[in-house]
Length: 169
Image (cartoon, rainbow, N blue to C red; front, side):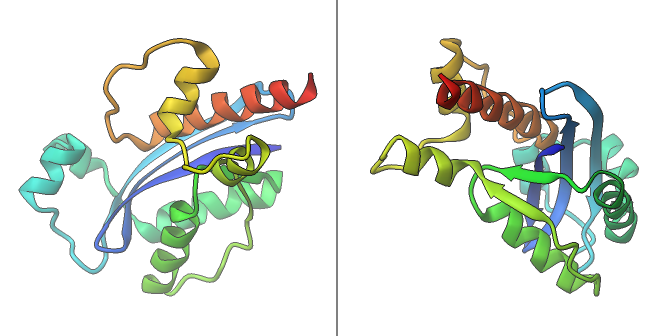
C-alpha cells in the first residue's frame, strides 16, 4: 500500500492542512482525505497567510483539532500499514513537530522521500520541484500551483507511479 504524500501545509511550525491519497501497489485509489487543521499554538491565521493559501472563512470553519486529524491518520496507518511517499523531508519534519506540540506519540510511519530517489537515480545536482517533475513526466503544463495539500498529494502519486514505470523499463 502507498499513501501519497501526506502532503502538509504548515504555519508557525504547525500543520494547518493535510491531504492524502491512499492507493494499492498498482496505483488504484482506495481512499482520499483532506483536512483543514486548527493550529494549537496560534489559533488565528493572519490575513497574509489566509491570502497566500487562498483560505476562506468556510475552510477555517471546517478545520478540525490536530488530535482528530491524528486519530484518523493513525487508523489509516493501523489498517493499511502504508509507505508514506513524500517529496522532500519537510512533511516528515512538520508532522513530527506538530505531534510534539500536541503531545501525540510518533506514528512510526514508513516514509519514502521521492525527491531523494529522483536526485540519486538521475544523479541531479539541483533538486527539482514536484510540479516541474510532474510536467517533465507528462509533457503537460500544470496550471498555477494552488498551495493545496490534496493537489500536492495527487501530483506526488502521479510522479511516484511515473518514476516507478520509468525505472521498470
